[in-house]
Length: 199
Image 1 (tube, rainbow, N blue to C red):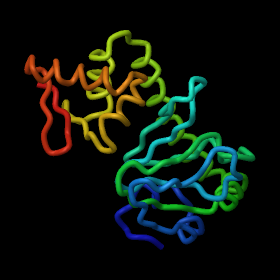
Image 2: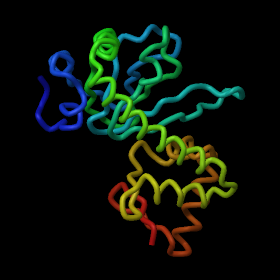
Image 3: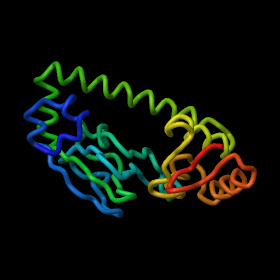
């Protein structure tokens, strides 16, 4: 079994699944899985940052999700193929587990299924906030919404970089840089130690 620091996994997963977990080091630039490929593993981000992305209709990369801690690839659990790319954007520690064993456990263990549904409910709430954020018209409104809802006490980690955050906000990185510069100039935002801080 992996280190005892991953309490949420120990609470969520049945013991035989915990025994099947493997912790790996994934450097920035690693592709964990590719759209169209048959799913083989479920992944949990223990530290670092991973984005789910795919190409939009105009050929630009669209960020579907950024994860600094938690599961990714849940949507492929019952799917014949991964629906997007899983890209590591900062050096990460990843817990991987065989997707076949995950499926079998969900089909045969009602208690685990219930815990899994509760975890997915929390993810749905997070995605609703993301939809709310994308409905905002101004770049500054979207950035402030992101920091307020997904940061802690007005403090948000830059992680994989401004370009990655721009993709999640659905704006160009040039527009986001201009917004950050204007907010820094007005004193409403600061950057230090890899974080953005609302003043």
